[in-house]
Image (cartoon, rainbow, N blue to C red):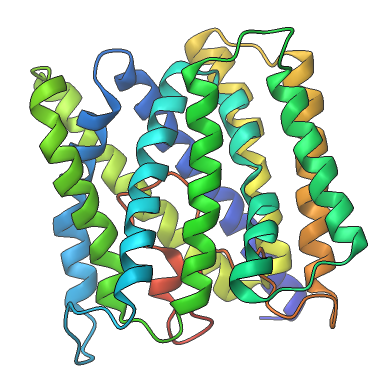
Length: 320
């Protein structure tokens, strides 16, 4: 396969992966009208355990469940738990396109976190891109003209904690065991959501329970396609494909939930996407970035069921 065809294949696989993830989010939104995000996360993680166990069974390396960096493992686990719960809640109460637009702030926050945590040097151009992107978030939220809701706060928190978890992964991912990176966040979700479940539980018919199982399956399918995409094409090609989710969100929102893409969300999303793509391109330039934290963030936010993409690529670049 030629380099050009491999790049095209990687881009197409990435588009397919994010289309699968968008479908995953649609089911969350549909179920969220009836059930608490706590219940949705708990059962989707529960259904994900057998699938992840099969994945881990293929890992023949000797390892145990004791993390090499227990503090970072704990912080990352808590961040992943918060990211999934808040993202699920945001998808439930906000229009899909608006939720994505806010979550797209994560690469901007990754760039900021990488300065103190990874020693990344951020020049004036990337710094300005971050500021412009954050201004785009304010356009989406338009504080003062529209009431800010708990859903907006949840989406922002999800972007914040997701970015933090990604940078922690970048910091310790080369040395930490795969089993720790995969199981700790899932066990954290299972334990914390399980403890809260009795307070919010609603009986579920079989069709809704099947929907939760589908969420788990789609998360792993999306992860698989994303792994193939990163193996076929460089990160600078694959990473910007995440923004295609805004197109899926617009289509799904209109067809299934009678949602329309309002002008402020469209403008704000455009600003955020342009800033994010610029940061990716700047990081790809040799010598501009030492750690390329955004390019090496290979996992989509808000999918607590699936293992991190990077943990499935340990033979290549191990950073998330």
